[in-house]
Image (tube, rainbow, N blue to C red; front, top):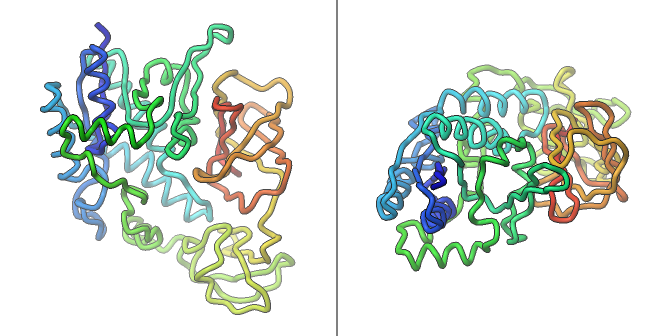
Length: 358
């Protein structure tokens, strides 16, 4: 009998993933990752992930399914790998995606290691994505979830071959509507639970306030200059942490035409402003790359690419510059590629891979 460690968050998706795993006859163990909790830096734990309510909901579903349930304390790892990196990225003038880092270092690293320690074969999550083994390539592939509105393959592009081999996505062929219907028909307490739309450890969306309180230093908050594309000073800003590429609102500067943040130079403490056209680029580079169907790209290939989670895919040509750098040339200029965000590449419904925009 195959055995599965199910990552349960207390939400409806991971709960239904647990149910489907049980129904397939797997030996199942439920587990919740304790990542961020307590009255930390003005962030109340009842508004963050892994809150007491979330834990109660996950435990309730596990009890209903008759499977063991554990809580794994990964708070130190989450602090080191996710929160500290999030803060440093903003202090460098970048725009991080902490969900990708959490998946990379915790859900598909720490959890798989913990599954091995418990003698379990797989880890199952509530992500809307699919895996497939390609016999011709001799590799595991990552595929989009069938629900185009919920597909989460973008935040999973960094998965390794071993992680794909050891991971199950029970919801990959379902829609969100179908998942809620399954939860309702099985009497789950969280069947109608709302989804979090914010970063779990910054539930109010005020990143600057969180960074100020958590980092307990002034890095990124020093006043500096707004400059135009030629380098001319056109105003003063309140610290690079308060801005991101593409931003228009909240600049506090009047000009003869609308101004946008085009780039951020944290070293010189300058924020470069320009008109809307200044935001567009056809060529985007990425480092810290991961390719899934192959170890390396031997020649340029046509792909579709996304610079942001909710962006529609755009046609492009992919080049590999060196072992850790990709270059994507889009057919048409793309708005506001931001350093720190993920560039993710597709061939149809198959994830080619991706990297961090530089």
